[in-house]
Structure formats: structure tokens, C-alpha cells
Length: 326
Image (tube, rainbow, N blue to C red):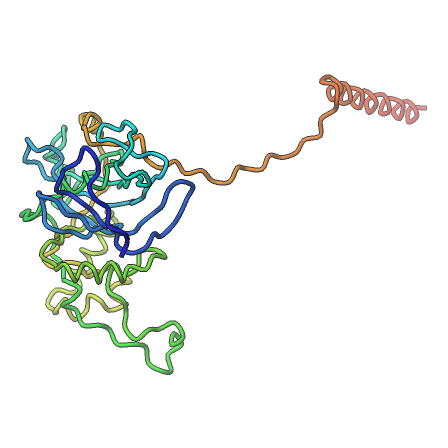
């Protein structure tokens, strides 16, 4: 468990956060994390990990609920920030600014253009730009007890039997484990088992019940549900062959599966007082090596050399032609 951080200036006095697990990377002044535990007046304690989906309400005077996807968690020791984005000094001199980057999804009817005939029944659309918030402010956006009815049904991974290990004479024995890990236990190369353990300690009642897939992944998942009609899905959904064709078990109960394949612009969101988009990470890679070019000391000598070489070639060719004529 990471160190517990208190509230930051300008945020909700009752909201706080705590990193779950140690940092998972470092890049310049950025320290990266894989999960955070949040608490505020607007919601109970929640553990949000990279790749998690959850419900948010950005405007207190509106009833529109959108889906947030946590894509990045980091601290930038260079820029402690205020709600309005201005630099300031914390009451703790060594503290830095904990930030989160989200991707937001809306139902088509909640966008400026509204729902059209080409929109699918289980479709959501995302904002073209990512949103950067202070972690303490993210806690004030979270909402619980959302009744979400859009999307395909799913099977909770805990209701699925764990597939048996590979037999001793299997060619994959060297790569096999005693049990296939639960869905979401590894994101890329990150080990998320400590995060799952912390979520289980809090309880599943605060887990979101929506999963956003790409359109191709959604089509494969829908096709898998069709193939399993007439069978008990919990018996098959975590089998390797079913997962290979697009099946998947949900990380939380009563999860609905939707898809996203389109984006839209949301200019009004840019004026939101809690946004810190200007503090989005600026990734700097290694500088590209420039090809070394031989340059002469005098600026015009290179062109003079090329012209003289051309004239030499032309004159030599003329001499050879004259010899041939003779």
C-alpha cells in the first residue's frame, strides 16, 4: 500500500486518496501508479485501477451521467496545482500534484447532435480529447447507485469455474500455471493482484457495472453469446478457447457491455473549473540521431566542387568521343 495523501487545497475537504501498491514507473518528473483508493462525500470508498470503467457526473446542476475510463495515474513533482490550474505551494512542502487522465463516454442522446439512426442500441460515443483532473477532484465526480440498462449482459468471473491446469504431458506445461488468473489481474506487464485484493477487501458493492469495448471486440463478444445460447455461460466463459474467440467474464457483477467506435467534440467542457488539461504528461523520448554530413569550410565550395566534377566528367567524355571518331 502506498503512502496516504490528505486533501489538497481547493478541493472537497472530505475527499482523500491513497495509492494502491507501489509506483509502477518513472519518467522524468512523472511518477506513475496503477491504482488509487478514493473517498468523498459523494461516494463510498472506491478503488480505481488503470483500465477501470466507472460512472461520473461532471456538472452538479445536470442529471447527465457519463462513463469514465481511467487511463493514467501519476504525480508530477514539478507542478503542484490549484483547481483552476495555477501553481501554488501545498501546506506540505514535499508534496506533489496527484493527477488522473480519463476518457469520457456518453450515450448518443446526451451529446450535442443527439442519437441518430446509425447509432447502435448498445453504442456510446467518446469525447475526442482526454480529461486531466486532480485525483482529489475525481472523487467528487464519482456517483454510486446508477441504474444502467444499456448493453449486453455478462457473466461475473467469480461465478465461472477456474479452468483446470494443463495436463503433465501437455506441450504448454512449461508455460502453464495452477490456475488461470482472474480477468484484469494483469494489464499489459503490470501485476494487478494487489489491486484486486484491495478491491475485494472493500467489497464489490461499489464496483461499476459497465464495460466499454471497441466495436470489433463487441462483435466478437456478441457472436460468442450467440454460440453459447442454450448452454450455461458460466461453465464456458473463462475457457481458453472461448476467450480466444471473443468471450470474456466481467470483473464485477451485473455488468453491461457496450461499445464505442465514434468520437465527438465537447467545447463546453474546456471551461470546467476542475480541468487541468494543460498538465497532461509530455513524453520526451530519446532525440533522433542526425546523419552527419561532410561540409566544407567555405559555404560555396561544395557547389563549386560538384560543378567542377561535372565539368570534368563532361570534358573527359567529349575527349573520348573525339578519339572514337578518329
